[in-house]
Image (cartoon, rainbow, N blue to C red; front, side):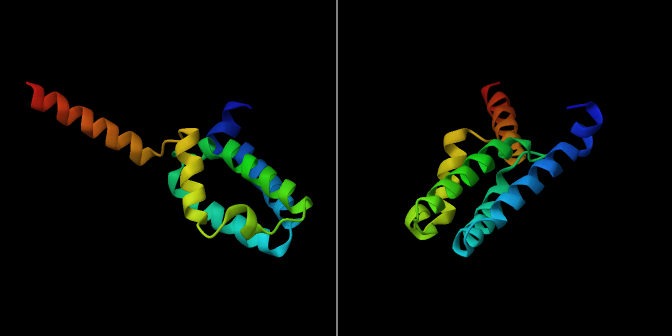
Length: 115
């Protein structure tokens, strides 16, 4: 990846288009679940969203495999899609810019209080 693509996000646009074309091949209930999953993931992205690309790829692979096995999206994800997404994000250690700022603020306050 060259510098320009990294700055503009062109590489991510290509990857997201690939994700969307893969998702369009899924059954309707999986497509709806995919949209909900994306909506729950994006608030946890860093400034660019690059930290989520591997997680989104893994989730899409899971959806593709389970749809081929004949399972419904509800059987795979359950009722709590938001909980599923949060569990994945916490497991992968994906930090959003808000988490980074929160840590910086906490460290600054701790330094001021220890003086």
